[in-house]
Amino acid sequence: MSAGNLTDERIAALIAMPKRVTNPGARRKVNSKHEQVNYNVIGNDDDTAFQIFARQSIKIAESFSCGLLWISPSGETVTLIRYNGMSHPHENQMEGSRFEFLCHIHRATERYIAANKKPETYAEKTDRYRTLNGALNCLLSDCAVTGLDIEPENQTRGLFDDA
Amino acid sequence: MTPNVEMLQNALCKSFCADVRIVERKGGVLLVDTPFHFPDGDAYSIYLEPLAAGGFRVTDSGHTMMHLSYENDISKFKEGARGRVYEQILAEMDLKEDDGEFYLESAADDLGKNVFRFGQALTKLHDLTFLNRARVESTFYEDLWESMTHIVSPEKVIRDYVYRYMPNAEDYPIDYRIEGKTEPLFVFGIPNRDKARLATIVLEHLLRADAQFKSLLIFANQEEMPRADLARLSNVGGEMVSSLDAQDDMKRKLLKMAA
View 1 (spheres, one colour):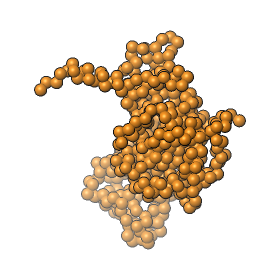
View 2 (cartoon, rainbow over the protein chains, first blue to last red):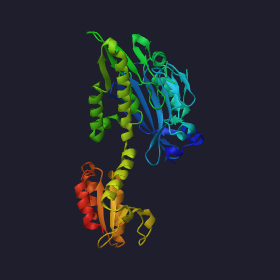
View 3 (cartoon, chains in turn cyan, yellow):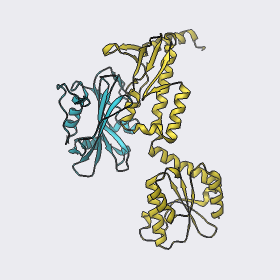
View 4 (tube, rainbow over the protein chains, first blue to last red):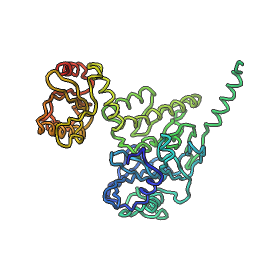
């Protein structure tokens, strides 16, 4: 199945599919004024490939993001779900709704794909997290990911804090 | 009815003012909220930093590259053809870059036009994502078709040709078949390493089936091809053209073999 044929049902199934991180020790690196790390993820069918990314701006603390990408058999990637910080406003173009400076969760939807827009344009505001660690823990839980331990956000150390 | 220019001007000014505002964020950081946004609906992050000498630095604080990094290897933006476009955008928009942070400096009086220029520049930089592998590959085949059919009549070219006189022929498609002077000419477009490997397999299969043909391999950029893949392909393939820019070579080789 290619990105253009994704249905809401298939998107939900891909997000809910149990999956595990295969390189939990992936090294973080600093690039373009943000810290980044990518984790390779495999579905429990041992065939479906995903990637988790985490980013934290060095200059703006509230600018962070993490997400789950699906890597289609053709190699095309689609962001299935993405957890953003509160650094910027967001607008849902098709719904005409907008919210400002709130953490929000993007999710790929069939209707945006059908309209030839970025699949994950639709987003909903959330108060489930305030930091990158909190967002990552939401992702691990929502996307049934095992094999990666992230400290809860009420701990003082963040993913990118020095040991 | 003649439009009232003054009324229109006032309406436009009012609308611009409503859509653009400065928001003070944590730590006194000044963010300019504008209608500019990424295709996923997230607004551009445009910040103002006061300069000691007066005026402001209009900056994205590295957010644009961070946003692009979610789905792209941003190191590739500075390489090859993408790198040339990237440098062109910076020069054209008079944009500076400091380790992935884009900025320009502006007098307070010029902030309006410079914020718009900055937004336009970020849009251009974002559009570098259109030069990803899948898109470049598809434009390569379009360009290849156009180049070939300038030299050979389109009626003489069969796309996705299947040579039926061998086992599992459908699994070994040939990009283009052109009627040849003595034997048919099979043309393969080679935009990347994967296609080089596939073309090697197809050509080997044709040779094993004792097919009579000549072949022409046209690369997107032969210099970027890994040596081992190129060597394997050279062993089974015929004439080569290093890139679509080598139009004279393509013309000479095509005309030599095509009927």
